[in-house]
Image (tube, rainbow, N blue to C red; front, side, top):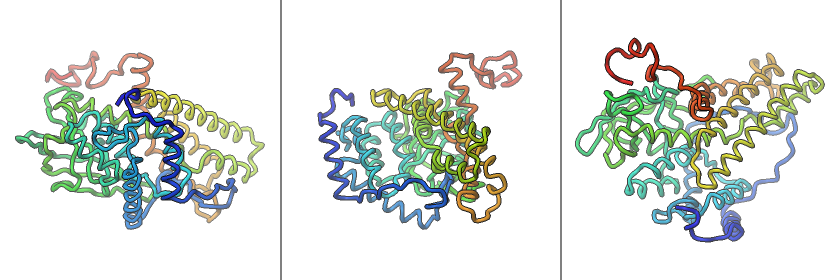
Length: 424
């Protein structure tokens, strides 16, 4: 809904409404104490290695909080009033987000993918009945959503995916495998991209669907990562039936659907922090190990700080554009690149400062705990599109450079690469 046609409620009045709700239903966070080396939680990991039983309890608590928010008119602040949204602006939404961050509420990370990536895609590409059915349930926390894009042979080159969806009357039969799916084990619905016309060029033969993650034929298996946890899953589809009504966009127009999700994904990832406790933790580490006068260490520390400030300013610019109603664009690819590059530099920095303490757990505070960061960082350079793919996006769509030659692009070796099938 355009902002000029939305119901008027001043930001001050809305802020008071939000504060009244939060005061009545949550406790303010305790005043944060200044960071002191050696005190508080010793955890610098990028991914929380949570126990699955504990996770189930926390999910119930998170859903209860979202339902309470939604029922108070604060669960879908920018949404269409015709299907349960509040119809206000992104500025109103930011007011609530800023205020809620001051209160102790259940972890809302369970809904990050469903609301940050999947719901916007449903809103833009699903039919009216599916929008009216799924969106209120997602925003209320009745359903949790996940994203099923990557495959064993198609990660960053998403258009090479091989999962098939074949039409059978008013349904589609889906077969194939997806991998690296965060939250699949507790999700109710998932956005999937499948190949529906293998004879078309790879970007043009794809179609998007919303699938029931509890449907017959869906099998979810946890993936153990090198950090020791299992935050991701592989998902198998064996003759899974999906109603055509749950198709996203037109048949064979799934690439456009996928781009909507990917731009929102990169906005979500690129707008996040670098984990590990932030710059203050790094600075205090340098002081603790008496490296404050070492020029190489000082240079590395300030390099991380400056790049972090650039990332922050880039995110502010992108947020301002979104407040004006613009969709996330290539600048979010740049933001995600900035984030992962700074995380890579942080990994190298702590490895240099800590040395063997990073890999040998001596029990010393603030040392071995960084291993979870260093081991988790490579995943961040892949999630939401690998760094290499994002650089191609920036080069081609922002700088206007020629498209990199590949198997699906024009090159002198095209016929040798693709045979005589006539595909481009």
